[in-house]
Image 1 (cartoon, one colour):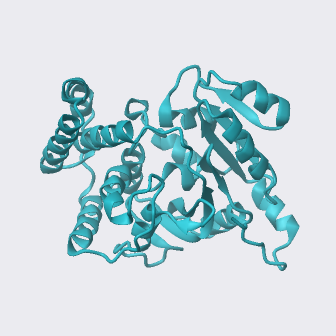
Image 2: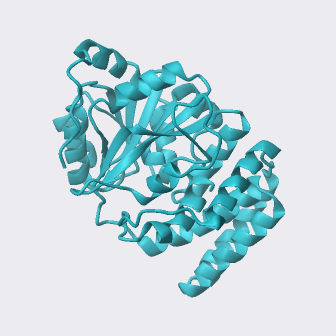
Image 3: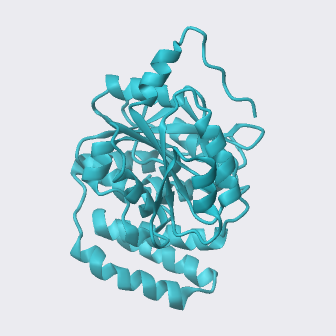
Length: 333
């Protein structure tokens, strides 16, 4: 895939100045070779941002390979595999105003980080920007981004489309906001971990915006367990509903999760885990404000009416239509 060119009128000094105000956090676990290729691309960005690698207790050569090849890249060793919460450990080391996230199989395209800095500087209401993801050599837009592109929410005064969620590996945050919100809950591990954080940010009055001008390339790793991810998405969606949403949503998502576990033959194990998690979920239950719930309902109604989506292959080879339920669980739609 050919990277988009930066217009000649954009001065190098501005790119470097913007780069000094944003840090890139890269999440990884046991994919040293792929991480090295990603770091080569990130280190070549004209913004030349600081880079922090959040290593989720890799047992391969990740740590020494990064230390050897990229001495200016900081690597934070999490001690254990914390899933998405590994990003929290890395952000604790960030001293810039903004922080951008990617994974070891994704990277930001030239100029996107500088544009993110410009947008956030000009839009104090915006807490999170979600980039457009281009998948593979064909550079096709990720199905989740296509869904975001059709958001029905009021975007007046925003630099892009208003959202109720974001994608963890293609987002830019105000660093202080991420820290104050607590980052990603370690109990969710991975799979829809964004929803709880997104709901809490919306409840505080911050906007989440989809911005087509920002681009992240994604070359999906073959090292993924789609069945496990489906179950974790369903479990986490149920937990988040018990934490923040009305009882009807919590019951519906719980039944949905149990049906998935039953279909995949893991009802006893995964069902027990889900029910055990309800103890802390109910203890920490705090309903989102009415205006946030109204946003969620507007998106749900829009989907029920049937938005016309492009049929683009997803990261797992699933059509955009089949991926809609994953996005609801992942981003709170």
